[in-house]
Length: 121
Length: 173
Image 1 (cartoon, rainbow over the protein chains, first blue to last red):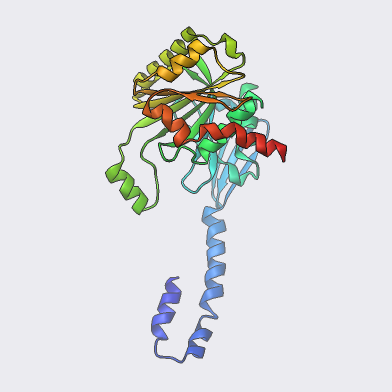
Image 2: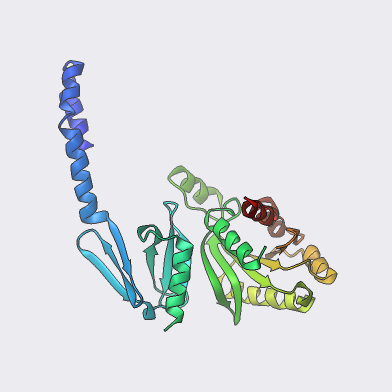
């Protein structure tokens, strides 16, 4: 975006066709860099099995938990219109959230499945 | 219509913002223990909703930030609910309200059949401003609410009276 603004300012006096040509570099470059940045820092994935689950954000951050760490489960609506499954270590205490949209499973189904796993311990 | 289906649908509605004109109920629990009693569903939130820039500014300047909760109870045999049971449920809720500093609460009873007339009268004449009470017959869709602002909000804002008809229409498709 910054690059586009800069290009717009620098090409202010040029003919329209030439200005359009100058977008040929920053637009695809911006898209590619944006996608790379997203997968490096913002892309979230969730993996889970019968023993626990792991949350990964970008390339580096991995958080792993066992179902046995938690005692209570709730569903929580976030600001972006999604619904997360929230797992509490103790009632009204610390919690960890699983973004349900990243699992590909309906939040209510995921919550019921998580409740079953927690109760099995 | 099964009670569990009705409660599931109500929970979905709440998380989709059904109560947004009254409160931002953004977290729900199932089979939640409240002061020794397990309510079939509980929802928590606050009266000040969260929005984006202007909405947030409006909410912050105009709306009070009360913490509120909604409690849903499944009553499998409507004839078994008596006035004493209703009083007991309200007692659990009031204790939770004191403990967690809640300003408002709602109690919604999901009933298989119409409640006894004594209980219906107790609900409809309840006029204290702390708890809104509602009862839904999951077979007929009949709703009765308490005689206070919170009770009326269950019908006017949360559209509790449309829950069962909507589910019946959905099943008929």
